[in-house]
Length: 116
Length: 115
Image 1 (cartoon, chains in turn yellow, brown):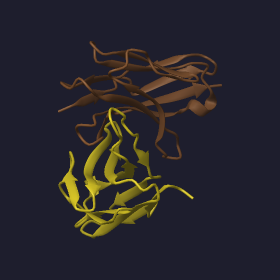
Image 2 (cartoon, helix red, strand yellow):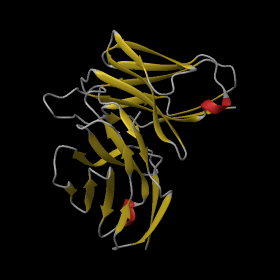
Image 3 (cartoon, one colour):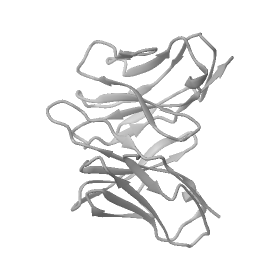
């Protein structure tokens, strides 16, 4: 079974609709992240969470909200979807790492979202 | 803010040949980490190689190696003996522990492998 899962894998919705993307992990990591990928722009950070009570805005948080329901679950919501939110969305997890070690991020399989 | 730039939108390489992908970054930090991720058509993000800024030795993972030039803020990826399975998007990324392990990505380079 995959360590980081995302649902749905693909979604088409209409402008103005509310939509939630879900992420679950079995890695036991405290840190979780949401990124969006656009052609030519790479991945950009939307929100991140260090634990259930610690949620932070990323580079491009406008139009999005998140919920950390448990250590293992981190959801991304689009309250009123618009076409320029059409993108590939990734969830990732990591541990903080001790000392100078930097623990890598583990990515989910991505959600392809299309807003018409 | 940190920025990561990949100046080559697309690179083409003959099977068994070598290709080098460029990446430059801008930072005022002294302790940071650099990564190359591979994204095949399956969309999965796969970590290819990582480099700690405090290490002078360039990282190597099998056919993948980096040329890390800290003073020039350059971090290139060399793929040797290219294989058809290397065809993918490649992203350069930067992160620091001080910033909570958040990653800043470049725009990506698509690698095409010709048989």
